[in-house]
Length: 230
Image (cartoon, rainbow, N blue to C red; front, side, top):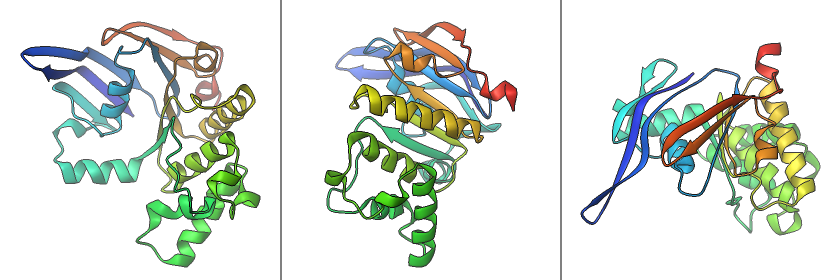
């Protein structure tokens, strides 16, 4: 599904070139659940942004389902991102005065009201929040707010879900619930790439990639084998 070949990302800081990524080559299979770990500044978020078409590599190639995405213009990148990718971040990014249902409906703003409502209720039920649909973010726990954010990411039925420190603001109980939800979504066929700094969360994925100074330092498989068992 995802293939990166010798991808580098360079930022110009005054007269100095700073390498966020250096020659990263990586493949992610359809239906896989991958964790990316590493110290702060190792390139984790930069790599996720490139995979998510939120940034472009300075050099190298990025292929999505065999198509050279890194060669797309901005309009094609946006189209590809909207059709194929869902995003979950550490900050929930919910509209504080809108209900859970309204927040989930946002990506479907140009569709009819009935269709928006129907699809939003379906994904809220999928994440276990159908009965909380009319609640505002301030009336929800942190874990529930993150589930609303996940529902919003799922509304366009993307085959790939990208999560950047999705449990960073949650307590241990909510963290366990969110990780369990990701695993369930993965078992249903969604490919998941997750950035985390917590090793106990990373081991809930099938494969762990460790970045160091913008390079892949190590790779390991875990005991979680949802992909192979399907």
